[in-house]
Image 1 (tube, helix red, strand yellow):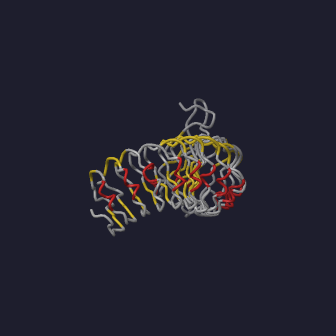
Image 2: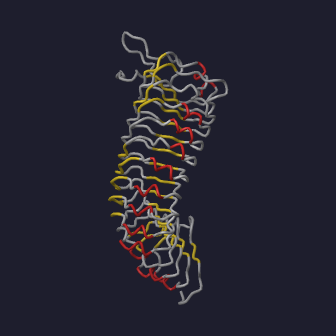
Image 3: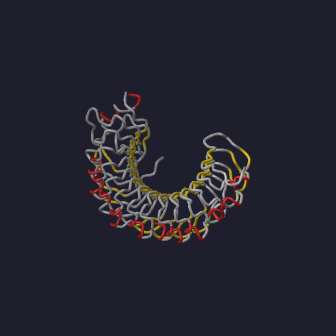
Length: 384
């Protein structure tokens, strides 16, 4: 290595399986703009002098086995735009002076042992586009300042110890496309201001403590493709306006306290493929147009209080359906032959078809089904 080297890019990446530690001689690359070491088998601690590489814009350590602290060594890099440190064994906390990295666009520390609270100075990163902190030891409340950048498009804080209510500043992040905070202790409600997030494509807040109803104007998020709000304590009904989510392919609002009927508008969404509404207190009948989305693969509506008969299926519909889970409801009648003909052993693709067709002593089954792969007793009854 020679001082004043004119090397601008050093890329040793993508399954080269380089091992060992980073040589401290790299500090001599004082003109370097990009250091890329992702997807190797490098290990050990990052040398302190890496912070002297003041012209560095991209630092990518992803998918290695680096240890020790890294964030406190880079906060003086005034030109750093991309910090990718995910999938390592880094530890320590997010420095209070992280806001010094005013040009930072990517802040990726997911799947590391980095912990502590998120400092409010993160709001000084006004060019930030993505924050990946999932599966770390990050804890404490979400600082309202985290949504300060008007370029923020992706936030992943899933599987962390983040607590407290969703800050109202979330609704000012109008560039946001992906917001993932599942497996946290986040609470609070989703407000009508969610309509501000016009670019949102993925909203995933599950296995948390989210309360309140699904906002009535959820249908205004016309770019939304994935809506996962399962395993919370949400109440209220499914708004009819949900049918406005014409790009929606995946909805999971299971394991809540949602009531009311299933709006038929949900099945007007032609892009719909995966529907999980189980373990709520939904009432009424199965919408007669449930077969309308051409590519629907999973329909789980178990453990509710649905009544009436299962509607038949017109020829040529539900040809992609693989799992239909209807059990633990109050449905009656017979599972129609048009559904049975869609079983995978009858030329269709259905692998799992569950209904309340178990015999209870001295009584008839709740629903007759000659083709179900699993039979249970109805809602409110114990299976024998």
